Amino acid sequence: MLIKPSGFPYEALEPADLCAISLADGSLVEGDHRPSSDTPTHLVLYRRFPSIGGIVHTHSPSASSWAQAHRAIPCLGTTHADHFHGPVPVTRLLTGDEIHGDYEPLTGEVIAETIVGSGLDPLDMPAVLVASHGPFTWGTTPEQAVESAIALELVAAMAWQTLAIELRSVPISSDLLDRHFRRKHGPDAYYGQPGEIAEPRPDR
Image 1 (cartoon, one colour):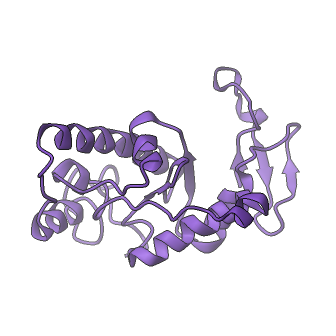
Image 2: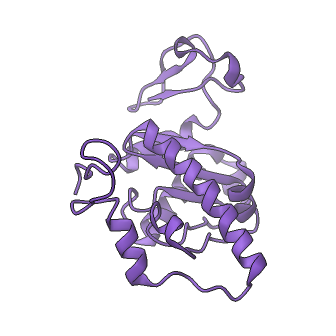
């Protein structure tokens, strides 16, 4: 696993600065810097879900606001449905013992617990909000993980604004949700160009 060094400024980051971490035991295989403090969290997700090939963790303001409110992001429209197959879930709060114990790997475990509890494939719901913390997103590649992070921040802001306009807004219908999600994901996807935007996932 490649991950950025802890506290390293992005504007100064070069490929040679990345830390290579063993998925087997979490040891530093290559690199001259201390790896990100979130490394144990990422390791849990890669180990639990082999289809994940890239993870992004941000503190983007809109998505983090939903995480701080301990609320899932409701799926109110087709922009959300294009990227996430339903409401983006929020984890339970970590207990005091978990926070004072192996905090980072247990953060990964509570994310995994939330994914499994949703009943969805992690690639159908490539994001989870960690309560009181912020969003984690992923994909089969690092590029897809970044795309999920950008999409998550957008739909988080849109949901917030929609509910500000009309508090009684209701979620998208299941028919429209499935149609929009499946036209971009899975074996019957037809959005975009073959081999580029909407190539069916190899696990489907």
